[in-house]
Length: 502
Image (cartoon, rainbow, N blue to C red; front, side, top):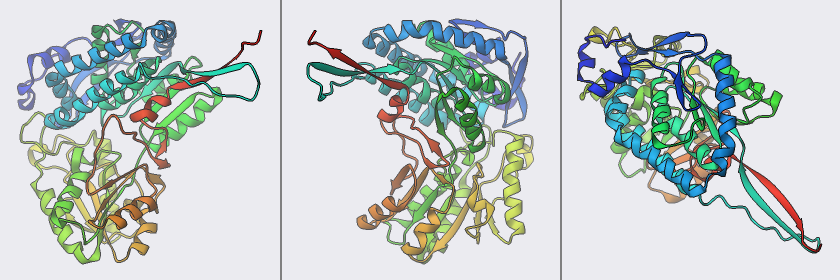
């Protein structure tokens, strides 16, 4: 398809235009092919509501082909010298870095995220995951175990679990894919990547770049399609050994139930409703408040770690509210390819309707909207834009405080004592992340120990690194991405007993 002459798109590079106007195909067994049915679906630019590209919809027969290809490649890949696997992953990372300028444009058009944010955050995280896990290829050692039986040598081997289905969300399509691809391939697994149907394009780019890097055919396959069909076929397939999923709590629970019938390995990184706590004794209240605004409004609040519950010491409550509102008003909504944009659209009209529903219900319950609370107007009306929104006066049992909104909506609540605070901070089904702002080191460590979350940031927020595991407690899921734990979940241990007495 051709690119319409829309002002925001005219700044895109020739490489981006060439990619978008080309034919998009599945990547299976080292070749690009259409879906067996020929069925296609459309992906949209959420900033202007226009069709961006048509992408193949993989059906059951396509998933069967991808699994067969991955199974065939598994023995080749796991027998490859670990140092050779490491070199290929490094080459893969180099190619993403080489093409970062136009990949950032494609990702921006497909997701609505500002291109500058993708270049500064998503690309480095993706490249970092590949390079970090490349280092693990040569270090996945077993151990020898002393046992009571005489004349026995007992040792363990760390082996890949097999074919992995990596199912990734629409909010961080590129780097979430690499968070799963990198450790799985480093462990010796083969992978079938299924991106979210809302943001399929960067996954297709990854499939092509993997082949260009020299990764053998069938080691990384890419199938695009809807979760209810393509994703379901992957979860049900008996040839899949592991499902690695990032997405909603509802879908994660469905995957866990379905995968149990074949006892697949499953790891789930789900939602969050994360408390961000500012004590009055923090070094710089205004800086903490400004960072708290960034913690919720970055990528329009469509981040599982978003600091969506700001809990503030009553002594500095009004000051924090004023600063957060000031920061919200500085944000400039617009198309992701515009250099001036600091806040892109929500991913879809459905998501906008969901977010606005939370705000309207909050207003009906007497909660005050002190900033935002409306969809974008004027030249933003054709896109899925929603104003950065700040709410005060919400109670702990209000739905907007308890449930994940996944939009640019912040509740600010006050607290009086630490004893009152901690039970409230933990009064959620989720346990993904939390923030603490204080100069009192004893208070900081005590609060970090008390909070039920997989990650706690102290005097900072939204810090990530490929070397540091990421995942949550409670209904935020189980299993970690990144770090040593991130590669462990793609390995299984074999124990070998040797009687050397003859």
